[in-house]
Image (tube, rainbow, N blue to C red; front, side, top):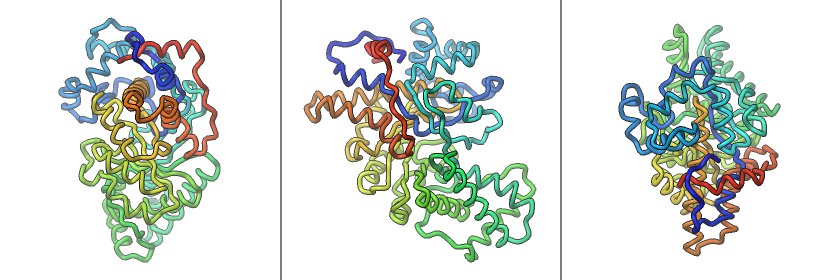
Length: 425
């Protein structure tokens, strides 16, 4: 890892080495920009979900940005005290492939599980392109809303006759796509962004194809979108219907389904982003393995509770790094560990757009894990050996088991372990 301060005498050396060098499976991330598009999206999106003018004006004044400035200066080899503007300038002028390589080498990421359904797909690299920077092939996570929108636009609306026949076609096409891409191993998980679109309060019982409520909603949706160049699936009855289809297939083919929860952009309604709304759905599909993404922040304790009491629920702690401050990250990890079984928690970077997002997501998560667990060890609540096991499971083994990746950790060599003796603490 790329670190900065001397190795402190009170460091738990074995735990520290594992926290900063053990390989990681990034269980939720997104594609990087093509080099020709690197100036098309504000760099501040690396550290904030703010939008428009506020992103440029306010994001540089967050603790997350101040911390990222220091860590990226270190990654780039810039002088101590470099400004955010100097960091941005360096990013824009550095060779893109070199920037990606440097970010990934310093992150310790062995494998990426990549959601390729972002709305700017034409600006992004394809999945195999990312393999040059990791030791294990990148695996796909299917964003179900993106697939559903493509099917509606290309196969349903072009031959629309009546709502019932169109809905039947849509259902068959979506089921076939999801089934084919899981049976042949092209995808290891589904993902839904229903949290963004209509909220997490998905009713536990699905509507059937004869439902007048469903047929009416489909008919209205067609009338509203038939002449538009792009389709955005944002009508509650239809979004809930798609989620139920995926939940059912997830159980049939034993692939997890990831739910965006909590923290997000300003089009998300926070009250409907709490995972507590999912509990009836969780109970309705006991054989479907559900991953709550982003620590459900600021609803982390609710997520930890659901993970603890429902055998089919798992908890991811990505995106809080690097968007939340350092002390906030520690508090979130502590809240996760209050109740959640440590064999059901998983790290992700939520890396996207910029290669540095993978680096920051990795190094900050490793720092938070080490700081929290070392404090618990010093308090006498668990041994250093158990803390090491928790780190290894959170970074690698839990995701490897859940997504059936069958990978072996490619542990850093002695030279890389020596680098862990310098930290960004």
